[in-house]
Image 1 (cartoon, rainbow, N blue to C red):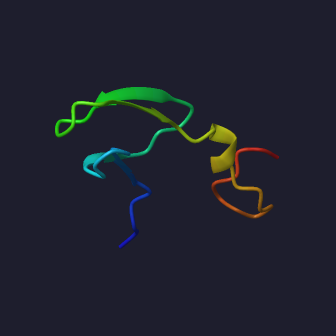
Image 2: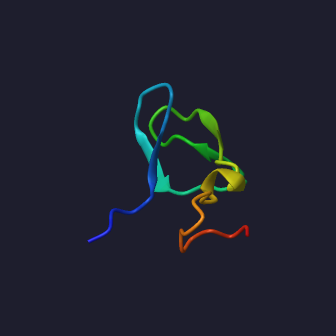
Image 3: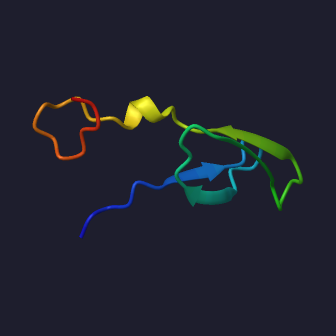
Length: 62
């Protein structure tokens, strides 16, 4: 079974789990239910997900 690529996103104040997911080329604001702080999270750039190995089946660039 393959492990999901999801990351855990937590509040910087109280370390409570905000959500699990994958953010690519995105930015979201989410409010912590516990401490009520508005948290801004930035996604990973899409080019970081490109495989650079020549024979990789996930390679998008020739």
